[in-house]
Image 1 (cartoon, rainbow, N blue to C red):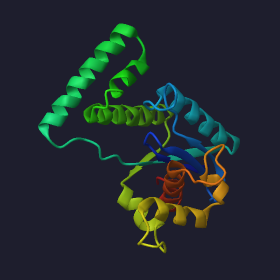
Image 2 (image 1 turned 30 degrees about the vertical axis):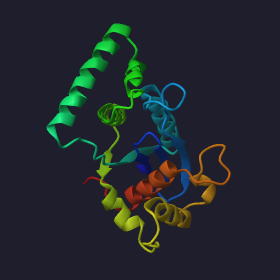
Image 3 (image 1 turned 180 degrees about the vertical axis):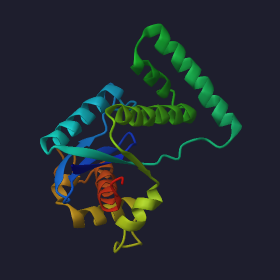
Image 4 (image 1 turned 90 degrees about the vertical axis):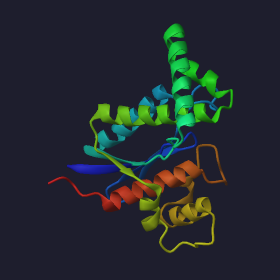
Length: 208
């Protein structure tokens, strides 16, 4: 069976990037956000993106393998953990009362770092859960893992974002590294997702 590869930068400014087995670009999507686009990651938007990716895979009669960047956002001190738990309880109460998932976004407007951790974790959970529902293989890579290979030959003096762009621009046409409507500036999330997809394509070993 044919295989396509989707790399995902799971942050709020992240993205999805889809490659066919030979390395050709099939598409890219920005991470969908709730509300005006400045809030939390939107679970319904994620589902729509995943359906679009599934459709691209079906056109090629292919299975999609997802490569996702591992997130290191869990607080290490007890006070921050308890704060996140308290915020989760408050958010759960609001969601239960109002019956609306986006209500949790109201908490994030307080600019509480612990709530930011909570929101990021919830978005990451939505993402992994929905991929699992589709039944596709899911591989999780630490940033160091994919960067070690994909940054080979790049200028180590550059900042990480610029180094990623240097690597991605050698692999893909620059127009694929911009978000829709952008003509000059590259999109950080798309760039990282592209490199994660390429790392997944190179390193993937079919089961059996």
